[in-house]
Image 1 (cartoon, rainbow, N blue to C red):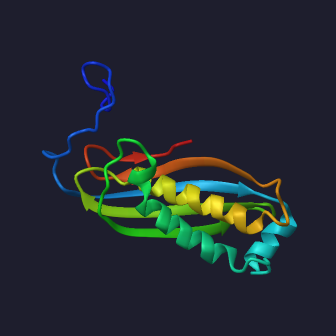
Image 2: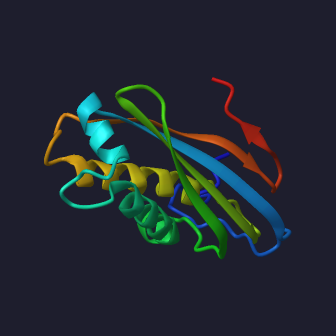
Amino acid sequence: MLTHLNENGEANMVDVGEKAVTVRTATAYARLRMQPATLQALLTEQLKKGDGLAAARIAGILGSKRTSDLIPLCHPIPIDKIDIRFQQESDCTLGIYADAKCTYKTGIEMEALTAASVAALTTYDMCKAIDRGMVIEEIKLLEKTGGKSDYRYEG
């Protein structure tokens, strides 16, 4: 059964009023592929716009806080923590991780996914003057805990 549709097939926000408040966590991931020189400029803070990773970290945090404004029928939730991490994966790829935590009646997966996505978009924006061929790829949920079930990406 689709939870966001009512008996008439119309959009419907899920009622979470009776759900238990639990600690919920999620980790999302995005990969940004670029030219090796672009990645080096980003990692060594040589971008003309400034510190690209600092800007992306702040943007990811801010994006997570606006998730319910961006995703239809997504509940606004009290976010306890958002952490954005970056990891060089190869000479041309950057992994972006968003760890999110809340204590609430519904999960925080969409906030983590939004954080990773917005951080990737901001990194693109910070680097586009030297590399417009960058590709944001493989945005995915890696893990979630709390609520009815836990999940871990196995791919």
